[in-house]
Image (cartoon, rainbow, N blue to C red; front, side, top):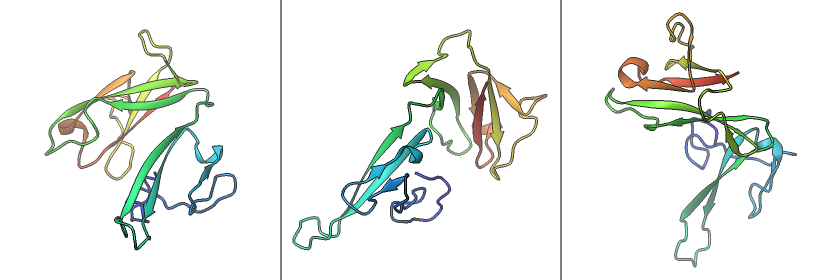
Amino acid sequence: MDSTVSTDQGGGVGWKKLSNTTNVYTGVTTRLITIYPDAVPSVATFKCVIKDTDSTSDTYNGTFYDTITFTDLSDPVQCTIVSSGGDTFVNGNGSTVLTARLFRGGSEIDSTSPYTYTYKWYKYDKNASLVTGWGGTTDYKTGKSVTVTAAQDVDVKATFRVEVE
């Protein structure tokens, strides 16, 4: 999965077609692929696309796929963002609560108040530019969770990032 891929390379938009790369992945056109640790900096999702080329098969020329996600649990602390209402607003309506969840060794940490870490949320506009002053007197909002509303926080598109200290 690669959000920078804007054309269909065989797996759909947002999916990078892999090529054999030493110490990253090998066997990308065979029935057995090897994924090395360098391919999974924290979390990585891979999609396998298979086309049936057996002309005697009932599914001849059919395309089938499946995905798998790997998580590198050796990182000291990993952060994921959970959205209470998905990632899409319709017709400028709706809201969601974004919550940062921290994991160490596969177990969630900092899940109850008072929180050990400080969370700073930044907003980027539809052009991927930082929205200055989004937090009022700062460029960020603080807290383990932040509420995002379609009417106030999203003009066509917005991206939210959290820094944990």
